[in-house]
Length: 343
Image (cartoon, rainbow, N blue to C red; front, side, top):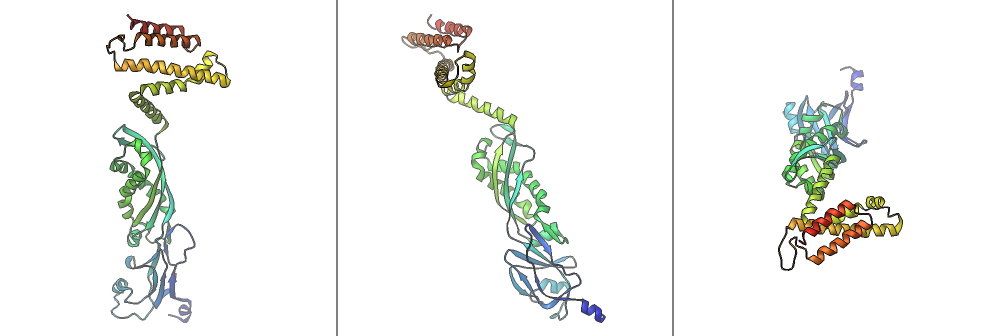
């Protein structure tokens, strides 16, 4: 080696990584033409790990601390370089630093609805989104499987792959949780736990660990949500016909008031509300009687209503017709139906 080459060559005494950019998972120390001095110091800070790679072969891994590089602290590298005694000359080796701290607020979500099987509704198309954190768990595996010889590797480089793994295991998570769709929104913590457990092996295969996964929203596409609303409504009918019909009547008040010319303002609203509730009560009573079936009782009409109750119902219907809420045809049909029960 000439004098100029000797002067140009630099020997490294301290190897360390000062993280200046967020989101970096792996970083290769820039040796260029420099060599590592015998007895050099390796500084690995908290939330860091350092890996020596010799001619493409993974060697020694160091955790947080200050390490003096000797044959005792580099046993694998010593074997690869066939050092049978303490080395006295500088040597060359690639050194990669890895960040083991949590990379926070990584987002996941369904760009399109995912079809899942639900025990209550059969097949449903589900939308969901949330966030999660990831950290380095196995630098050797990450270097071999992911980062390789690149100068640096960031979470942004992995974002699409990790999000894809989460969505791929979404259906497995729903199945393993055993939580019906209707209960998913109220059990998001359990759902997130199931999803985290389902995807963990895929992350581990990359040398990573998933942590802090959250499910922030679970929903159906709009057209399926309408069908679900109808099914919920039918469930309400089965449980309490009276409440359901009164609710439907109250919902229809603006349309009824407009059609009957009730007018606007507090007085008109109050009149409409009273009429709507009365109509709801009449309809609920009639439908409920039909669902329960006719039952014969002493002093009662075959329809299950006493004569005075039928007359009271007719009076209420006549009042609703007078207010324009019921048409003449609707009133006549209902009147005929009730009068038959008096025969």
